[in-house]
Structure formats: structure tokens, C-alpha cells
Image 1 (cartoon, rainbow, N blue to C red):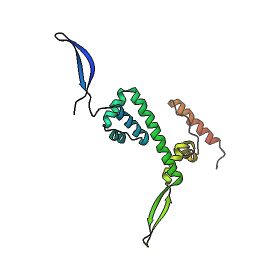
Image 2: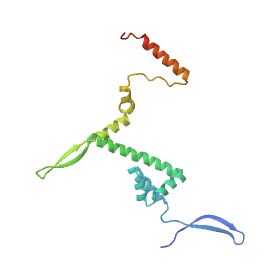
Image 3: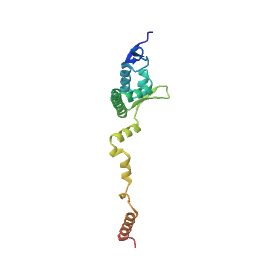
Image 4: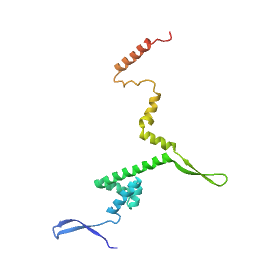
Amino acid sequence: MAKRATTVARGASATTGPRAQVRRVRRDGWTPARKAKFVEVLAETANVTLAAETAGVSKMSAYRLRNRSTAFEKAWQEALKIGIAQLEMMVLERALNGTEKDIPLRNGKVKTVRVFSERMIIHLLKAHKPEVYGVAPFRARFQTEVTPPPVMDTAEARARIMQMLDEIEAEPGDD
């Protein structure tokens, strides 16, 4: 197999004059085809490891190239957006339609039932409506008193405590 070479730069030597620096093109390097394959698989799967394996390069070299090349970084980010959008659609489809599960019966037959993941549905609701299904609304439902603003100094804290004591004494109580 013949080795391919690429002229990189021309240099000058004091004794021989100008000469070309030649660097071999690595067979395992980032070719335009490998870059395209990597970005294509990343857009399909949102999985860097799988995209690197499919393109025939290491995951670390993919990250290094992303750090060196702004064009590759932009393509990477766009591919991830596409891949994650596809994953979201798959999750949504599974949450809405469930998955089929085979259940063996005693008579040797198999019954197919549709199963829904409640955990997946809850995660989707929290993601899309955090004001309703997030953690904060649950805390707010059980909170009976308004939380006072934080105390800045001891004099302010003492004044607040005295005010609360005065309010307690002023309430009509069980005398």
C-alpha cells in the first residue's frame, strides 16, 4: 500500500535552500468522511461513544477535535440537539402509547399486554410543567406559615421576636 503525503509548509535551510516539509496523512485520522459519519450518528443517537466507534475514531480524539475546530463544535452541538429531540420524541411516544410485553400463560400460550411507565410519565410532567409537578409546589402545599425574610443582624432578630411575642399576647387566648 502506497503511503500518501501532504505538503504542509516550505522551510529554508542555510545550506540547501528552501525545502518542503512533508507529513504523512494518518489512515486513522479525521477525514471529512469520518467527520460526516460521526456527526450523522451523533444526530441519530445523541451518543458520543457510539458515534466515535462508528466513525472509526476514539472518543477522546473526537473531544480534542471539538476543542480545536469551531466548525466541528457547531456541527457537534447541532447534531446533539437533533439527537436529543429524537430521544424526547421516543420517550413521549412510549409514555403515550406504552410498550408491549409478553406474559406467558399456564396453558403455554402467550398474552401480549400494553404496559405504561408511570415513572416516565411523571418525569415528563415534571419537565414540561415544573410549576405544577415539580418539587416546589409540593412543599408549598404543606407550608402553613409564610417564611420571614432572612435576618441581617441580631438587633433585627430580637425586634422580630419581640413583635411575635407581642402578637401572641394580643391574641384572644384560653385564659
